[in-house]
Length: 235
Image 1 (cartoon, rainbow, N blue to C red):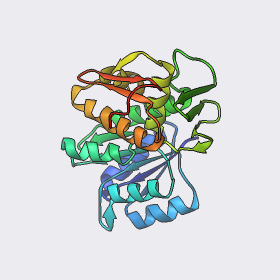
Image 2 (tube, rainbow, N blue to C red; image 1 turned 90 degrees about the horizontal axis):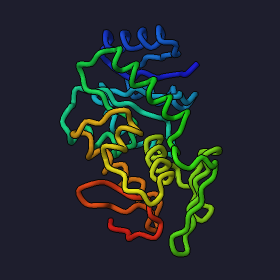
Image 3 (cartoon, helix red, strand yellow; image 1 turned 120 degrees about the vertical axis):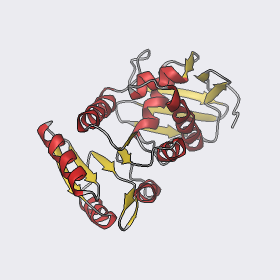
Image 4 (cartoon, one colour; image 1 turned 180 degrees about the horizontal axis):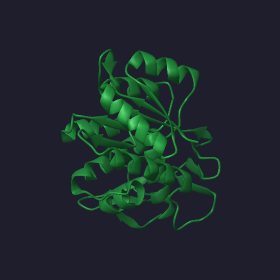
C-alpha cells in the first residue's frame, strides 16, 4: 500500500483529501505544519507528499527545496491557492511532479496521484526496451540504468526527481528524434495544456544542470528537444 503524506493546515481540506485517498486504497497521513512534516520525514519517507505551500510555520516551497538539497527525492504534488504561472514554474523548478490549484476536486487529485504512480512504475522508454543505455559526449559517458533507476556521468550518480527521470528516459529512448513539448507533456505528465509547456523547459533546464559536463539535450527553437549526445550545449 502506497503511503502518502498530506500536508495542509485547513482541517476540512486535509481531512477530505485523506479520506478520499484512503477510500481509493492508499495509506494517507495528514499533518498541518512543517514541523510535523519534518518529524515524519525524518522517521519514515513516504511514497508521495501532497504539499500545501502556505503553512502556519513555514513555506512549503522552501521545505521541498530543503528536502532536495538533502538529496531527498520523494515525489511531490503541490496543492495551493497560488495559481499564477510563476508559482507553478517555481514549484516545478523545485522538483515537483505535479501542481494542482485550489479549489480542486478530490477526485481529480486522486486521479493525478494514480497517474503519477503509474508513470513511476512503468517508465517511459518506449522505443528502446533495453534496461541499460549508454551514451558518450566527448570524453563524458552517460549511463541510464532503467532496472536500477540510476543515472551516472562517468560513474558518478546524478540524482533526478521522478519528473526529470521520466523526461530523460523518454528523450533518450527516442535518441535523435525531435520531440515537441506537447508530446513530452502527453507522454510524461498525462496532460497537454499549452500553458504548461514552460514546465517542460524548466525540467529540461534542471536536467541539463545535473548532467553537466557534456551536451546531451539539444533545443530546437520554437518546437522542442532532441536527445543528441554530440549536439551543442546551448544553455
